[in-house]
Amino acid sequence: MKNWLTRLFPGAPDRVGALPHPEHHRRIENGIIHRIRTILFWISFGVLALGMPWCILALFRAFDIPVFVSWCGVILLAASLIASLLFHWTLPVTASIEVLLVTAFCLITPEQRFRGTVWQTPWRHTLGVRKLDDGGYELHNVRDFFYRSENDFDVRYRTVTVDPNRISSIDAVFSHWDNMEEIAHSMIGLNFADGTTVVISLETRLPEGVEQNGIDGLFRRYELAMLAGTPGDLYGLRADHRGETLYVYRLDMDRRNMHDTVVSVFERAEELRKNPQFYNSLCRNCTTGLLPMLPGADRYQRDDLRVILNGMAAKMLFEKDLIVHREGESFGSLRARSLVPGLCRGKGAPPARYGGESETRWLRKR
Picture 1 (cartoon, helix red, strand yellow):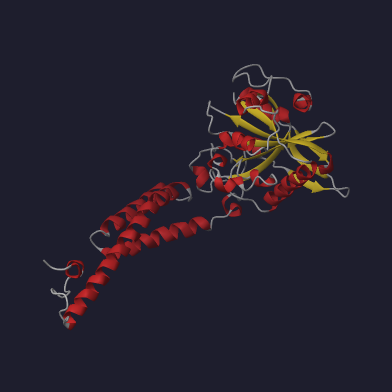
Picture 2: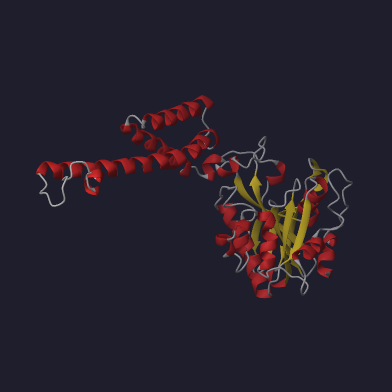
């Protein structure tokens, strides 16, 4: 029986201690090179095969090209990858196509994609901020629509002046739809000492005729928009007319942190107006975009899956003692108390009538 060296590398000496012939050296070297090439081929093949689903989706979702061109790209990709099993020289062709697609995707900019876009009415105007000499902020395009139904509403915008030094509390708001517990839309409510409440919501800014799609949200099809609105608009729309279940939790923050959060939100709003960004369903959405604005909360974004499954984010904040609650209270009890009363009555129910900011008075009395 040949020894292990002979079995591993053809051409090795058959007997231990035998002097190898120069030809044996070449055979061993060739065997090593062959195995290295084989290993590198299968690693490359595996990487390209894993990247192919993304490339196929990108061909259809990310680029404004005819469908038949997308299909031609799919056929070329698949054919070159399969052919590489017989002809290794076709593997660089597959790699070149995938690198080209990734490069083209990364070069897409919001300015290029949305040039001349007409936005749907709810997202036509985003939050505008002007800092005043006394340290306050003048907020423009604060949405205050009056809804008769989800798609039947009177367009109303307000201009609101607020002072970060007079912030009294901040709420984390989660609105669940279709009875999904793991997924929700996240908002924050800024409550000021004069009774003004401004709700902040990061959303997809949809062009006319476009419906939101989770897959398209991964391929730079939507702009990230920061909206500001009254509770009657942003809470009432979701709870009364979309039939969503809405919870409002008071965040446990000192006055300094609340002040810094307000300033951070308004600075972020101005940044988005000057430098638009793409929405991303996973890494730049309603939750991952708002969380870094809360002092000390951004560290949870890196190590807790509940930031992605944001319907569970409220429990995460509760476990981190970032939500005000009674001593010894369970999360279930707090959650029941945090359901917005008088709003969540199911889709199709008569809408609640709002009288300015009074609909959030119950929050301040808790």
